[in-house]
Image (cartoon, rainbow, N blue to C red; front, side, top):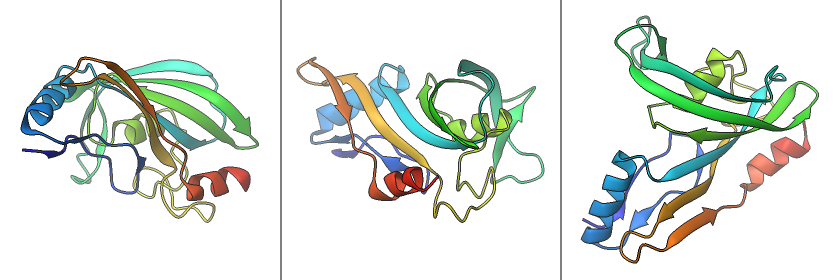
Length: 170
């Protein structure tokens, strides 16, 4: 059925793919499953990351103390890979580009917390902030092949106004 092909976490802004036909929906869903669609995010994280570029490989599973949350676990989790690169630093904050090789629930938020650099405004994996009304995580780029024509596509979205305002006020 036509419609939304994937989702974003609550309070995450950004691009999503919407299929116009059944055929496109089926192919795009398969492409996500096969991890051939590349999603890239921009995040404002607390603190300055020691490693300016890196790869986080871990298992993510349910938090044993709070079943609504996910966490990095040693056993019985799902393999998760996140790549990141610091774009800019302003005082105690970092603007980070984040790419996913896997798409686990809350993956970026869990991995940034694991590095002790939670996303600004993330009241689940960090702390609420007076500087941001929501988590500063934005899906800004999608790379994939058109499901019908096979044409290589790269879609880049603008940062939303609230994100720009927070960046300006850091």
